[in-house]
Image (cartoon, rainbow, N blue to C red; front, side):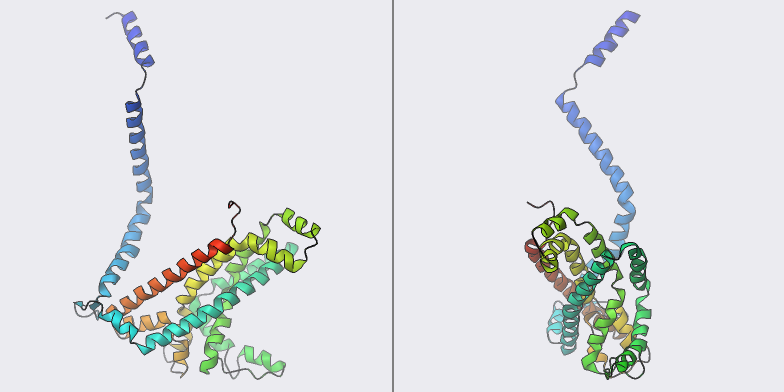
Length: 325
């Protein structure tokens, strides 16, 4: 074959048209390569999720159908643990305490967060300093917050009752009177409000200024502007905070356990601070009823799923997204 023939054949190959089948095979090969690369980069997270989340959830679902005390092998009992939950008066008490705490704490948390965010939005240059001040308590370990609760809310010489005394108010026994234990814990939960304030502040500063100018031209006052402009525009951030804090409220544990169920704490007000997750912890690690505790965990999971689903459905009516039409 001469050099001229080789050049002609090369030119013919270069000019050859790629068929649709070959193009499709090439796309599939590229797609498979991209999928392998993505799985390779995601593999640390996938392994961690399977080992530390998915498998424990599956195993706890199995344990919820057994009588297991950690020492002996699990004994299958079917739905007996779930039936026992329906007839456990202490579980009902813990659920009532948890629902009351969440139903009061979440709206109060949102209101205080929004008020502080509105004040920071008007603070000008000093807002950076106050953002830091508000967020720092969020870094405090929950166990330390539980101990701080006992110090600040002590009925005899706590700081809160001391301040109330300056105004002639006889403060209640926050840590020993069952009627005041949950209100005290609700007030103490506001200690970590900083993260929500920062989120709402960012949402407020993303509201287009032209909307406020239009409302002002229409003669709208502060309340009308807040209801018609501010709240709709920051509703996605508000919805996010409501969801997160509702889930956190239903799983309240650290502060209440440290304050009322720690070593050596035998106050008679313990039942007033008995939240669902605390009772679950007691069943699992104090009474070694691991099967029953697993059933309780799945019961709480279903409750959270239902409440979250209801909130998502309701949000379709009240939450506004700029991309919606």
